Image (tube, rainbow, N blue to C red):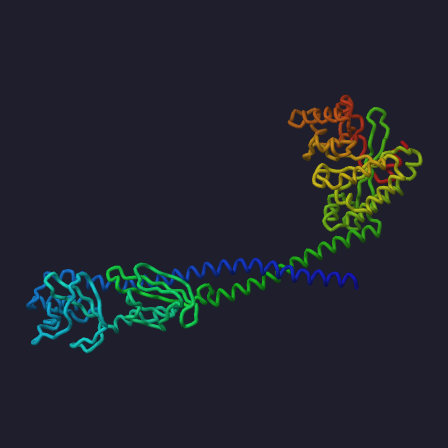
Length: 529
């Protein structure tokens, strides 16, 4: 029941944790997509304005070019003049009529011909340059038209009429379906000259007169938030194109993208839940497997002898853990100790190892009270009160008890310093295992209560070889001598290595040259021999 509750709790935790992680990540992704999409839509709005500027502006440019050349037109409306105006109208479908107005404001002729009686329109202004007015109703075609005009140096005006239907067709919202409205407005007043859509302006913000490009995003007078882009025509700055889009849709992806994003979110959430559940299951199964092995006493100790090289006596043993797996056979620590450290079973396993060593070595201790017994310990174990208590228990049995730490454990967990001092006060010897392969500095050797250094087997293997590690071995031996630290050489495998170390004062050896790690029965036999 308790295990089921633990599994259910872990699953619920994984669901919540996965939701938080996915929500955070997809929140960032969605924000990025929103910003990118909004900027892309703003760029599209600008592009639509540019399209109108290009399409309508090109017609304005053509008309302006013709009107620029009007200074050479015969204002007496000769046949050649009328033919020239008709040719321009024929080549430019956007223009329906060309007219000439005298300084008195009378239309004297147009592209249809000479008027029998001049028709009063309005007196041409003295101001030079292209201008517009209208829309007006053309007397000849009876259609609404937009007028572009220029006043000549002699006071005559030449104008061109652009049908408003053509302009409205060009501005039709069906071509710009994403826009709220599109308009050509008076740059001074903002009054629409041509409009498609529902025209509105931002509240509390005066846009006109317009002299340069303007864009902003605000709440408009129709109570909706819009993005607006305004750009004057280059050749007719009195006119500007205005395009507007509802800001609500600026950053909103298409339904396809939105559906895909939601689907990815759900799948990622489910995938992460399954991954975390699998991890928990693996950890729980690994822990259950090791605890089961401990209960069945499948784990046992192997004892690596510590040899006095001069007398060949066995001074002690390093206690190593092994697993007699019912299927795989005998397994070394590399197959299960790292997993035990990850799932926390290393504590139960280490407590079991000490109890087993006390039981196994009781006959040996009875004969040799000063027999050295050494256990490998990591920083995590030294932070567990139950393990410290078990070490104290072991110290009451083993007079000569040593714990071996790696350099990384000593350096990465400075908080264990006080624990080490407490153990030293109880008479426990502190050793650094695999010395020389980590990053232990002299200040740590002096500040921590370290009694013994175990020379790593890689340095022992360099004996008799010309490589970079050979000088390091001698340096380690010399440093230990100056710091008054005891030394043990690991991995001694040849007579040459044993003689070399003995000659330099390192007389306690450990390695296959003497013996491999043995089960307790074989270890006892070796001692007797």
